[in-house]
Amino acid sequence: MEQQLGWQSVHVDKTLVVLVTGAGGKTGRAVIAALRARDVAVRALVRRSQQAETLRDLGVEDVIVGDLENPESLLDACRGVQSVYHICPNMHPREFEIGLSMIAAAQSAGVGHFVYHSVLHPQTEAMPHHWQKLRVEERLFESGLPFTILQPAPYMQNVLAHRRRIFEDGIYPVPYSAETRLALVDLVDVGEAAATVLLES
Image 1 (cartoon, one colour):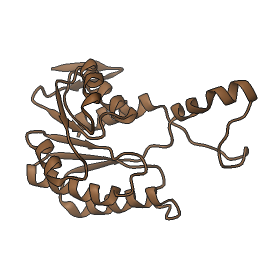
Image 2 (image 1 turned 45 degrees about the vertical axis):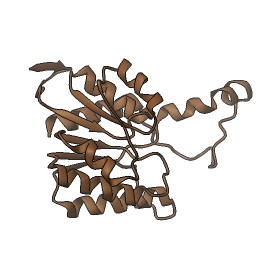
Image 3 (image 1 turned 60 degrees about the vertical axis):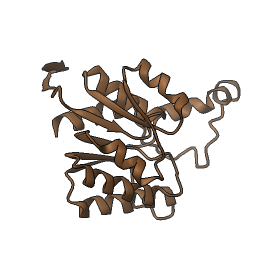
């Protein structure tokens, strides 16, 4: 099957199943929406059963409730999929350990392509959640898995959490100078990039 995506014609393998971890969060939902728009089958790994209905509204039929800190749960989720898009919950204190377990599960299950959702400037040691992502990246290089690493900038959508303060008081309450230059990315574009990487690699 081929789909026209802008100027580009992309062949969609109808046997492809992509596991998306952290599927109940905003990033997971954006990646899933982009994959489903291309008619790609998705297996979604979520923490709570209540998240399943939202994902089914996106066209996901295969939803697994599991624990990212349970290696057996990860192995079960990886079995039978061709690709993994791994998103760890934001600022999780055990991201490195979860990343190692996820890589091991993908290796054991024979996953063909591992895509890791990292962050812009993971080498920033003063930011522990960035540093943990860098350590996961390093393990991917050693893993022998075919992999891709995405390092998105902060999302434009994060500004929306402060919209009331912005509109009512004219203040954007962030802990840095008003002169600081920011690189922002639209979450929808991140989902599109993820889907492109998963389909073209």
